[in-house]
Structure formats: structure tokens, C-alpha cells
Length: 159
Length: 317
Ligand code: SF4
Ligand code: SF4
Image 1: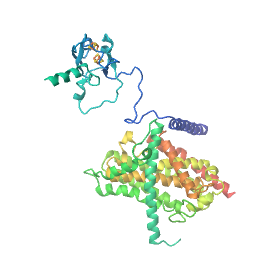
Image 2: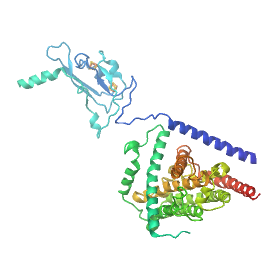
Image 3: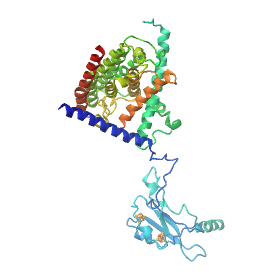
């Protein structure tokens, strides 16, 4: 009886010390969190953010030629593409490329279905907005140079 | 007894108030930093260097909040409770010797005074629980009383062990008597029991029965907000300081130590013990109320009693 009493106390104390060893080790090791927004995580190669258009390296214009494959493949129907030929070009170029991110399930089917690999995943994970509407019509063209802008401004000048 | 004059009291009270606030700022910061690092987080980082002024910012926020009393609360008790909890601290800090000469007021029974005033904290908690007309508050308050019954007797027995070793109730003389060997080495069992008891006394995890967030929302301070809440908060951290200071005096040789000046040694030892308590809190899960009572009555009490008897017999021989 008395031995089991003593044994229990010694065993309990031992396990408490073991626990304290775990926490002090954790305290002395590196922290895992970063000081957002001053620091950003480096994301893994294959991180899937929202989709974005891939530019042609030399011009900065979108690779996309507005075939509409992605929009047709998307199971949630959240891509809207419209395009036309810029002056003197052989292929079309997108004039509208909208993503309804409120519906997108990040399945990646659009990325796979694109014949010229014009879509990729962005690494932007810090997205927030005061309203759901902020993400209903994300303009994916806005971050790229456009083959139309010079033409459009020309037209404006003439008009 | 030295004669007490008004100026002396005012100066010591001001010093103690400064000490209490500075201590709260530091310990809360240390607590949050430690908690963060133990969970691989940073803890506060924004206000001041590595968040050192975070507590100050939180304090200002709390002061600016309204104190809401529940409609059926016993308003007098409700308002009184945090005051009852906090004010004894200022007296309890008086006899604590930071060195042989730095202490606010020496009494021959300093040890008893500090321990008796520590009881008022529990009274404050009970009043808060009773006065706030809230079932969680009331449960928290009654738990605090059950807890005090379980730990005060072993606590007093270990204190008595030290008193018969030192032959005095005066904190200064107890510290002076350990010039050579610290009582922690002479009385390791008493030291361990005392460490457990101060965690129980300061109502901290794993023995934070009175506020047990997972069971009682916030226990006795469920209904408190604003300044009244921050007074409970201040009281908790100040009692931690007093309890650690008492442990330093009784077991860690008070201000004795090589090279560094005496008050620095004292503060270092106190903060080591405070860190130990923080370390406990972020390591151990909360025990159940019955486990805590079982430990108090079946483990701490008999062991401290046996330890006391052995010490008394050895000293008498
Ligand atoms: S990732 Fe899937 S859901 Fe999102 S746009 Fe592409 S196909 Fe549609
Ligand atoms: S499938 Fe590719 S090329 Fe076709 S519209 Fe979509 S992104 Fe553009």
C-alpha cells in the first residue's frame, strides 16, 4: 500500500519533468509563424492559389488566345473569356478574362485543359475583402500588359 | 518596533505601487512571450521592443472600458471584491526584504502577516463569485474556498519547518540565517511542497480551479469588465510576485549571492521562480477539482507533516 503510494508520487513527478522538458525544448527552438504582413511565407512550388494568366516572356502580353476551352471545361462555370484579333496579329487575344473566385473550387481543370499552357496558379494567399462581390469578378488581365491598350488609346485619340 | 512616520509610509507605498505595476507589465509580457515560444509562435511583437509595452497598451484599453454590473448583482460586494483582492498586496509587500537594508517595514512576524494577507485574495474571489449573481462565478468562488482548505495547512506546516530552522518569523532574519547553505538544499521536500502550494495559492494553472475556462467560462471574474477586471488581473500577478518573494526568502537564501549586489540577486531569484510558474502553466493540463483536493489532503498534508516532525526531532536532538 505505502510502496504504491510512494511509487505513484515518484512516477507522477517524473512525468511532470518529462513534460517540462518538452516545453522548454519547444521554447528554445525556432518559431514557425511569420510576422505577417511584414513577412511572407515562401510557398511550395506546387501551391494552388487562384488561377492567373501566364504572360509571353518577350512581350508581357497574355499567352492566351481566347479559345474558350477553359471556360467550357470549368465545372463551376466561373471563367468568362472574350477576345478579338489585335490589328495585324494572326491570333486572337483576350479582351475580357474574368474569374468568379466565389465559385472556383481550385480544381485546376482549366489549367490542364488550356492547349498553350496560358493558365497557372498564383501564389497569392493573402486575399481578403469586405464583401463577397470583391471576388465575383476578378479581372485576370489587369496584371498583364495588353496588346489592345496602345490601339485603344490610338482610337481614343482619333475619336 | 521602529516608530512609523507618515512620510515613511507614503514613500514605501509609492515604491510598492511602482513595483507592483512594473512587475505586472514585466510578468504578463514574460508570460505571453513564453506561451508563444512554447507553441512555436512569437508572442507579442508590435508595441515596443519585442512587444514589451503590450501590457501597457492592454491596460489603457481596459481602463477605457465600461464596468457593467449584472442587474441582479449585489452591487456593493461586486464593486468591493476586486478591491479586497488587490489592496492587501500593498501591505503584504511591506515586510519583504530586497536586501538586508531595503525593505519598507520590518515586523517580527512578517511571515505570518504576508501569509494571512494572502488569504484575503480568496475572500475577494469568493465575494466576486457571490456578488456577481452568476452560477459560474459562484462555482468559481466556492472552488477557491475548497482549494484554500486543501493547501493552506501543508503550506503552513512547511513554513513552520523553516521557522523552527531559522528560529524567527521575521523575513529578514530567515534570509540572514541562510548565509551559507540555502534552505532549498537543507529542506528539499519542504521546498517542493512549497512550490506546489504557491501555484495553488496564486490560482494558476494547473490549479486554476476558480477560473477554469473550459468548465466555468471565466469563473469568478466572468461578469467583470474594464477596470475591475484589470484589478483582479493585477492582483493575480502581484500575488505571484509576493509568493515567489516569500519562497526566495525562505528557501533560496533571500538576497545572498556572489558578485552582484544584493537586490539584484533577490530580483533574479524571484523572477526565476516566476518563470518556473509560467513554465508550469504552459506545460501542465488543468487537474480536476477532486484530483486537486485529493492531492492536497492525501499527499501534501501527510508529507509536510512528516517532514515537519522529522525536522523538529532532529533539531531537538
Ligand atoms: S480551377 Fe476549376 S473551378 Fe476554378 S476556374 Fe479552373 S476549372 Fe473552374
Ligand atoms: S484555354 Fe487557355 S488559351 Fe483558351 S481561353 Fe482558356 S486560357 Fe485562353
